[in-house]
Image 1 (cartoon, rainbow, N blue to C red):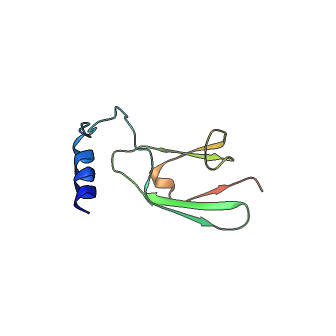
Image 2: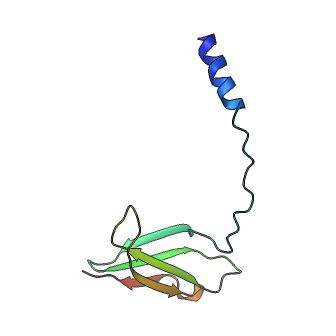
Length: 90
């Protein structure tokens, strides 16, 4: 048991990459407290916590869920438009 602990501890010491404080992005990548409610079979209502310094959000929808390569709908949403109901293809 002691040998396993020493092996794990020695393995952790070799990882000393610096923490990235800034990745160079000028925007947030996901909203805070996102809520999605399906209102009927083709409409979804979206709402999230807005940031004070944001003038609009870009909401993108993809048909291939896991890879998100094909964007089939893009909607620009102002903070004053929330909650927003977006019709999807049915």
